[in-house]
Length: 287
Image (cartoon, rainbow, N blue to C red; front, top):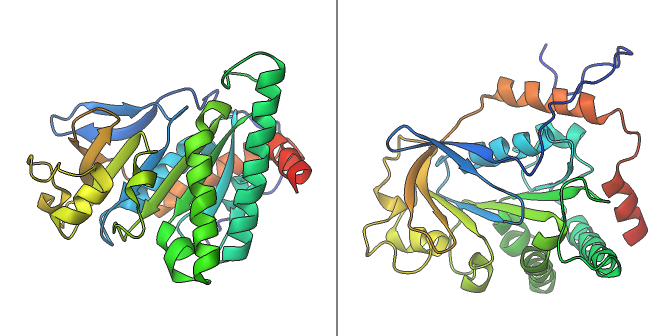
């Protein structure tokens, strides 16, 4: 029977991949069949698209890459539990359908961020560097709308979004990377002020030009770049745009459920060698 739990400890020494969050992420291929690599460090990423567009698959690819890096900790928020749940054993923090816990987690991350800035100031530096005194943190959120518009009251939803905007705006220099996905790319979920904070944006198949523009930026549909034109049967295909760039058609790579389990179990086995990670220590100090 297939299990999502890490294999039992055999007494062997875990061997890591020697990957770093400073290594570019392999995203997929462009329309000419050429590989597409994305640098994640010092950047954030927004993923949008209608249900079935492949956004969760792309998010799993990003989390899988980070899980195999030995210099990044995982903080995962998943209202559905099952999209990122396979990586729970690799994560320092995993939040399911619990808005109160999601807010508390973002508040603690905000304190961690402030503490890291205080450290950088004390050593006369402006940003996080490879092999620094602390690890990078990947904050991956599957379905922003669940926490910002579906559960809880308006006050709590607004609190969640305010914290998310702050982490996205200020976290990059101290190694905090926010990757957020939503299947409801609407203006009430992705405000222009929030979208502008994501250096990378990926729009999978969208139901209309307006939804595509909400992810990519206003006016791209009129210039011929609309995710509404993506074939509904071509899952994982969409437009990718970087800050100041032009949207490019990309086919994101795909991991099967078995692939995700294999990567997640291996990452959890390697990470188990440390009984208490540095992020866990930081979050406890911030509590």
